[in-house]
Length: 344
Length: 219
Image (cartoon, rainbow over all chains, first blue to last red; front, top):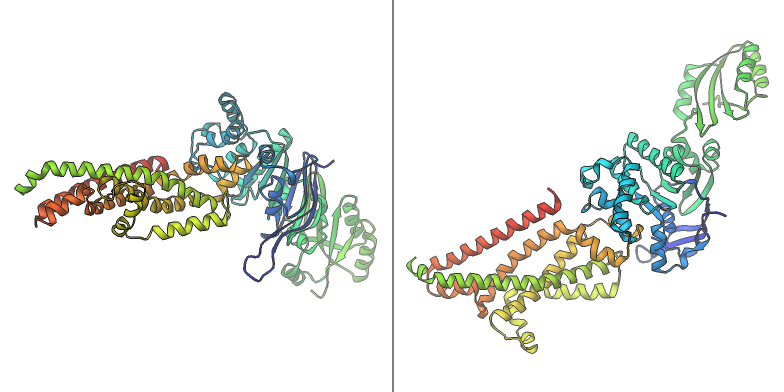
């Protein structure tokens, strides 16, 4: 049974201006997230991912549809039940949203105070969490004295204070530089693996998905347009919007100006070899060589997603035209070959 | 100058009266304004307890009373004071009028300063399982404390100003002292002595307020 399940969740807001129709933030979204997985939701701003994330801890309620957590329909929960639910779901934010009036330790203590834990218990738990995120030395510092990455680590410690089973991450790395992003993603991976916390994260950066997610959900205009394992979606995106996101992290096939430039430098034929599990790259090269055809790799990339490999290699092939034709025909038995359009 | 020296005891009494009326007004108006300001903040759309009707009514009330010039308000609220059994002149009436005037002024200042607390902070607290009233009464005032201290400091200065005006209706204090012994007797020395005392009070209040705010804001 799935851990988090949305069934036909729809969220509409009243019209922004008089006369216009209601704003549909989420349009009939159904989604299942398993316990222990890292689910990445990607989309441009306004795609509805932020609303979707907030359905999970009921900061937003759906206009229609059902949101279930561990089998319970939380849209029927009263305020008291919701508060208990939220204690069991941590959340981190793009702008960190730390309490400026509290120290680092005070921020981490907050959810525990709200949950009514004893002073001794809070002190011990805060120390443990600050140790986990590597900020034990900053316990008495105030948020404004911290760097962005440190602030987000405090945010993570605060979100984990009550040992939640779910962590919601709202663009948690979007305000951070690339190095800090990797550091925070590394910490989130530890949260998932060492503590077994299910993570739902939203982002507009495919790189974040590539690094950390198990499964990806692509959203556009309030709808889920594609879901799948990160490997499947990155290696074979089905929707144009998905392909655009994928192109931002995987640029292994020459297009547009790149292709024109290649064509100008190489007068032979240009073919792209599809590298994937089960394709015999070595046999392709051996076959080309056996036919006396010369080639060089002019573009491409091999991607490793959690140990599974895919990618493309573009070859500029030169030599006798008939030999090339025979060589390519023979080589295509070992791996898919695509001729790059010779008209450019 | 000689006249001023003979009036020193009166100047001292007037100073004490001014401080008494201003403090009492600050206490009553400050607490009332804090509550009213928090109500405005909480009922505004998108806030913790959004309620269009309550917000609309409070907003109109505040907008009605706040712009009334204090010297006119003094006269205008006199029947109300008498209606609830308070005298229509003197220090008690001045405190009544100042409480009303400062309540509405302070409520706006409180509302505006609480609005400087980022909505994300409220969201983080809700996500942590905090109840809305816990957020409103315990987290928000603490998060907005720095600007609030500065806002209240500003109000105290305005209160001293109101207190002086209340001298016109026999409330005693530095305003009455300046008018009766200075202005009406053509003695600028006496008038300026009242001004000097007021300047000292205002400077002290501003100094303390700034120091407190610096402490709260840690800068």
